[in-house]
Amino acid sequence: MTHSGDPWTTSGMKDKNKQHEAPFRAFLTELVQKPSEHAKFMNMLSLLEHMGSRKIMVSQMNRHETMDLDTLQHLAEEARHAFFFKRQAERMAGHALDGWVDENTMHRKPAMMYFGRLDAGISKRVTGDDPSDLDNQAYPWVSLIIELRACWIYHIYHEVLDKSDVTLSLKSLLAEEDKHLAEMFEMVGENTAFLQELCDYETALFGKLWSQFQSSMDIAEAA
Ligand SMILES: [Fe+2]
Ligand SMILES: [Fe+2]
Image (cartoon, rainbow, N blue to C red; front, side):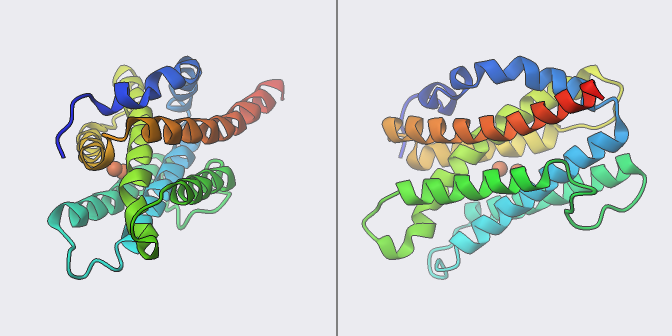
């Protein structure tokens, strides 16, 4: 379905997250100067990308007769992002970072909780004609909301890296996330009120996750 507008203005996402932007940028600017912490942050991104790709796969299990190339490509790209961040994290750490455990993953539990609540909360809010296939109906909505956050984070992260002396490019990753965002918006974005409601829901969850980052920074500063 073709409709006017873009995902940012329609969802109001950037305005809703205005207060997080400067502190998040400041956090990243400090983070990229500390290779071992930076590696743990990237391993957390790897975990979230992995959870995202697994979520797409599970939600599409019943589409044997309708699976299309775009969905398979989306799944493959999210799996590759998980690989990309773990590979870069290992390069930064200078050693293998097997799995996602507290020792090698920044805020592992809050990150997993954020994703789990996001998925469950959106899936619950999505209603359709065929409640037996809710996972599939939730797919574009969960993805659209996740892509908004991924693009928000990665654009800031990209700008921070660009200004730093760290050799790491997010250019192709960003291009893929921007494409996913446009595709998901194309699928369901015409339902403006629902998009804004889900965006509010996600912003509150992100705020909780971000407060974990901020309290651990306060502890580090006080130490
Ligand atoms: Fe991704
Ligand atoms: Fe994506």
